[in-house]
Image 1 (cartoon, one colour):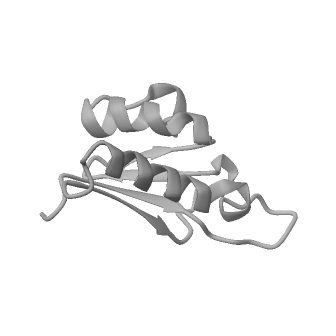
Image 2 (image 1 turned 90 degrees about the vertical axis):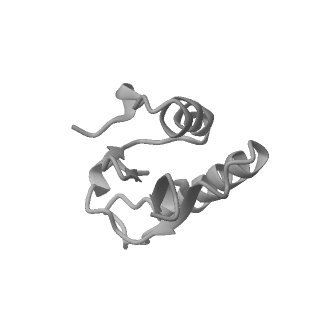
Image 3 (image 1 turned 90 degrees about the horizontal axis):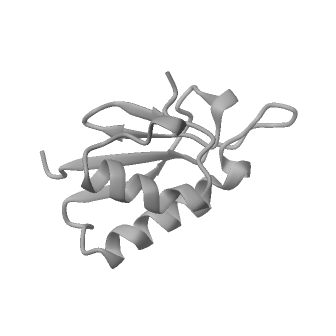
Length: 100
């Protein structure tokens, strides 16, 4: 496997009144994850990228971390550093954001 971890952040756009990760800062989350990983010198081993629908719209903005397959919901820009440090670096999921 090329990357130790892979983060897929939903940036899907849906018509109102459905909740939509794209409209709920999905693209900003992609940028924030990429910036954090680059700043920490982790871009070669951990990849963050935009994704289409993850089918957890009610919990958006959402993302999933592989290879563990941990889904996170209601992720805010202020949560990015905690996910990076705790899960991506420390291998410990941020339980308060995990979608059960």
